[in-house]
Image 1 (spheres, one colour):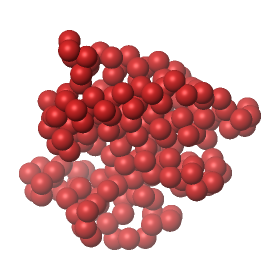
Image 2: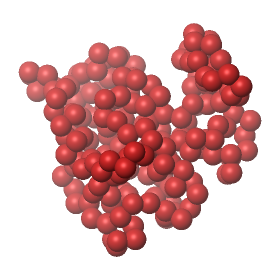
Image 3: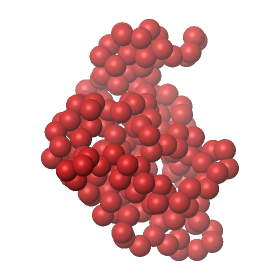
Length: 188
């Protein structure tokens, strides 16, 4: 997790989101200049290189924290939730654009259901019925033959079988009950 309070690794940022790297210093490393590294990006002057947080991994990490029995009082949970609220979207996988969008939707649906949050309030104070909004986003991209396919082919989402599988599994999560256990847990 990109959270200096709990992760003192030199590659760690401090935005609260989660990263994935296949090896130490892997390809999700942010760089000072676009094109540097496989997925290089321009970062603000004076900011150190760090592994960039992105949507699907932040939702996966957030869900893992919940499954580990942590709650909204834990700084890791709060930081991940704040990242989610600050990067609220169904239009892209934040940090990766269209790459991995269908997996992002699946990770999002599973994490928010695990959190038992029927409404998410984004960082600007706007409430979102995430299940309805996610269903709308997924159904808007359904193809006429009933399948889904991501024009961004990374992680096999350009294969209709993979994108369709992720879309259907995400939609299935939306059918499962979501009810906060108390008023205190309505939002982390």
